[in-house]
Structure formats: structure tokens, C-alpha cells
Image (cartoon, rainbow, N blue to C red; front, side, top):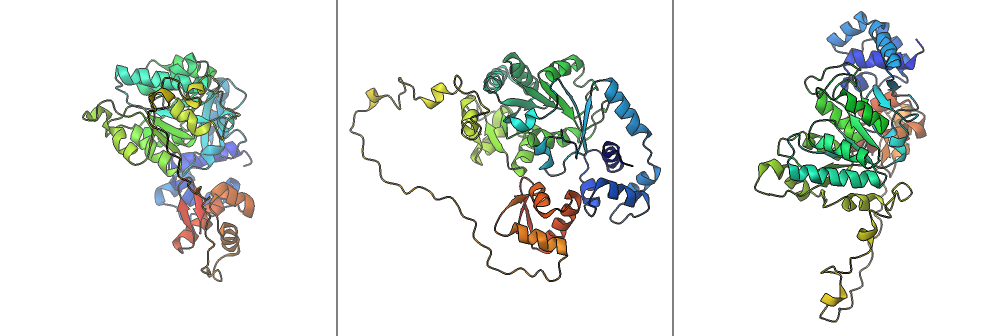
Amino acid sequence: MNNKLLLWMWLAEVFGTANPRKWIATSRFDSIEECYDAFTNGDYYGLEYDETIRIQNFNFDNAERIIEYCQKNNINMYCYESEGFPKRLREIYNPPSVIYAKHNSANLDFLDDNVTVAVVGSRKITDYYKKITEEISGQLASAGIVVASGYAVGADTAAHKAAIENVGKTVAVLGSGIDYDYPKGTLSFKDVIAENGAVISEFEPNHAPIGNDFKARNRLLSGISHGVLVTQASPISGSLNTVANAVSQGKDIFCVPPCDVFDENFSGVVNLIRDGAIPVFDARDVIGEYCENFSHKISYSRTMQKYIVKSEDSAIFSEKTITEKPKKPKTVKPLEKPVIKEIKAQIDTDNLSEKAKIIVEVLKNKEMLADDIARETGIGIMELFGELTELEIEGIVKSLPGNRYSL
């Protein structure tokens, strides 16, 4: 077997498309080829009984049919090791093995090259919040920010349409297969989105959504994004699951404040704002978080002008409202950049494997993404996860949000 795509499809089918078990079971191997050879030759260490049965009964007929179907229906496929696989998805917990995508561009590189913000909200969106969602999504798209959403009715659809109407890019992340008609009667809209961005899913093209597929989808939606904006949410809204994933991934959280703090239809964002989410009154509150670090990617000259230059008729900033002589501001010592304290305690590495010792040495006095650790140590990503897990059990390494690790 030398076709990596087929092997990654095999892994997804054996363990389940969105099941994190596949990364645990394969962590001791250096490559997908080594994993396949071991499992198919009876090395079932760490596997559950039903997983061994699926390995024994597996054949590549279905995978080959899916590849042929995708080729005929203009669906692109990217496995975990493909060049076109979005980089940010590699950094999340439980990354997908394979993603299916429809897009008009040459590849999905625009997801790595631009700021992406996920816009989520209620399926039963009110007219007021629909207007807000459309306005903010349109402004973000006009500024060059990619607007991502989950393709559900309500807020998601409003965000996608507004981005397209403002000649921007939008990405739909699905909890079903790309060619499965869900929500019913919306297949043609997927083609419109593909022409103006991309439609992506980790599920095979005609997969009907079941169980927790939408919750699984949410980790990918937040995963491709720099931040998540919630426009309307009740306490049981699925949007809050996307937020939970985003928080664990270290992403920014934005919320439109509720118009009625006593109405539960809008109260899902209250605790988010209490916990530090950034309140959003229009797109400038989102753009302002990224215009400094991504100024070369954001066209904020029109959108941001009023935000940067204080309004002349502002009740706060207008000189006409100042009746007292302003006091001389106190001199405040600027905050120094936090420094990670050097680890003084000696870590006993005598009983560790050679690769574990290398990982400990690389992680001294810093936090690192798993991909960066793999690159610096030369250890394969799957084997690396196994070593990191062992080091966590020993109490030497701790995992952090966003797939980061430190001693």
C-alpha cells in the first residue's frame, strides 16, 4: 500500500470518521503505512475488540468507490498529510483524517492565508438578529475576512449569504456529506458557496447526519477560524458547543450583547460576556482585534476609518463637551512582556526513552504546538502523541488548549 489517501480513509472507516480513538491507537507508529502494516498483520496492541473485527473485515472497495465518485462530481479530497490540508486543522484536538471539499479556487490555501471568523447563532433567528448577522458578516467579508459558518438554517445561512452579497469569501463546514441534501432543498446553494469560497466536510459525500455529527462538525468550524462570533443564542444553543471547542483551541470569542437580558432566547451569550468574550456592536469590534497583526490581509480603509478616527460629534471625545481643564495623566509604567520563568526543578529523565528525553529538552522553558515539536525533534506526529501521552501520565508534560504542550 503506497496510496496515503486510501490509508487515511481506511483509518477513518475502521475507527469512525470523527472518533478520536484513531489518534490514540496509532500514536505508537511513525507513519500511516507502519500503522496499517502492523494492524493488518495482527498487531492489535491498544485496540478494542470491535476495532480488530473491523480491521479484519475491511476491504478498500468502498474507499475506491468514494474516490471515483469524488472525481466525477468535482469534489476534492485532502488527507491529513496532503499539502492542501488546512494547517489550522492539524493543530486541533482530534483532527480529521480526510476532508472533502468543493471550491472554485485552485486549493484551500486561502484558509491559511487569510483571517477567518466563524459566525454562528440560532436556527430560529429573530428579524433583529438576522439583520445584525447580515450586517456584520457583510462588513467582515468586505474587509477581506473569510466568513465561516455551519450551513444550518437561520444565522448560518444569513452569514453565508451576506458574505457572498458583499463579494467576499465564505466557507460552509457541514455535519453531513457534501452531496447529501441537508437542510433539504439547499444543494444548489452549496454550489454558490463553492464558487465564492468552499464547502467542506469530513464525512463522505452522501453521508446522512446522525447522532453527534453536528457537534463533531463544530470542532472543525472553530478549528479553521481565528475567532468565533455568536450573534444569538439560548442557553441550549448548539452555538455554545462551537464556542466550547473554540475556547479549548485558544480562539477568540466574540458576542453580540442580548437585546433583552430577561429573554432566554438571547441569554446564551450572557455568561460568555461575563467570562471575558469580546462584546460586538458592529464589525469594527472584530476587525479591530486583527487589523494590527494582519494589516496586509485586511482592507480596513473604508470599514475601519470611523473606528480609528474619533468622531467629531462624539459626546465623549468632542472638545465642545469638555468643561474642565483636563488633568495631567498619571505616569503609568508600561506592562512588561511576561517572561516564562526558567524551570528550576530538575526532571529525572533517566528512565525515559531517548525520544522522550529529546521532547523534554525541546520543551524547556516554552510552550509549543504538537506540529512544531514534531518538526524540531524529527519524531513522527503519531508517535509524538504517544510519547506526549506517556509524559503526561508521568507528570512531566501537560497539555494546553490549542494542541500546545509544556513541561
